[in-house]
Amino acid sequence: MFKELIKAFRKTDALGEMFTQFAEMLQTGRWMFTTAAAVVAKTTPADEVHDELFTRDRRINRLERSIRERIMVHLVTDHAQDVGVCLVLMSVVKDAERIGDYCKNILQIGEMFHGDYSRAEYTHPLGDLTERIDALFPMVADAFADAIKDQSEQAVSKSVIIRKQCDMLLGQLLTPGGATPPAEAVALAMRARFLKRIAAHLGNIATSVNNPVPLLDYDGKKPLDEPEG
View 1 (tube, rainbow, N blue to C red):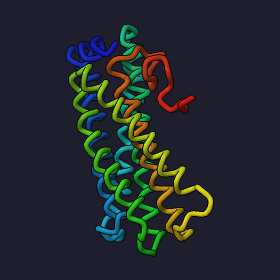
View 2 (view 1 turned 45 degrees about the vertical axis):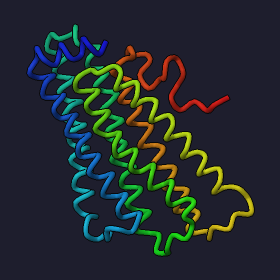
View 3 (view 1 turned 120 degrees about the vertical axis):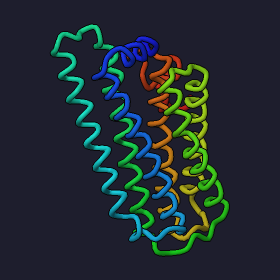
View 4 (view 1 turned 180 degrees about the vertical axis):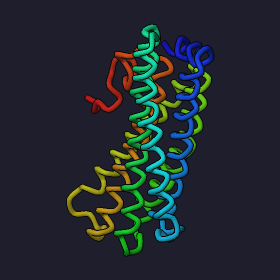
């Protein structure tokens, strides 16, 4: 499916423009992610980036609407052979849009939590997870742009590992009798949750390289978000 997608992009100007717009969505999402992460880690003041972050989120939303509109126009102007391509695009642009929303959520944690982080056993792993997610953005973008099968598989695997580690941190924070102050525990838990969701959406995008449309967001035949059992 994805090799057909790439061929379609190369032969059709309309699909090529959608491809470019989607790449911009991921680039903008990465900027929002690194910026929001700096605010929640208290290395960048929220008031310095708040307006720009929300401006870029609106840009992502406009790009999503533009791609959707282009898809509809493309399909109703005698391009029925590209239905599969368009279904893939419909799926991945929603993932990219949701990444922007979770970045806003991370920023809001930084704005609302006014205390200091006192538990390095949580802040250090969260910082490491943030760096790994940041590195996942270009990995996913390149795999999608060039239909790199091995790289997409690696991205899906990294996404799964990150999500499991986020769940481990959440479990520790929710264990009764913990010594973390309540407000700090809430901020840490929400950070872990939103990091997990961003990693999940990046993983979803990566699945589009190898999977047919019915198995988008799946690792093999297992949903990416299915709990271990």
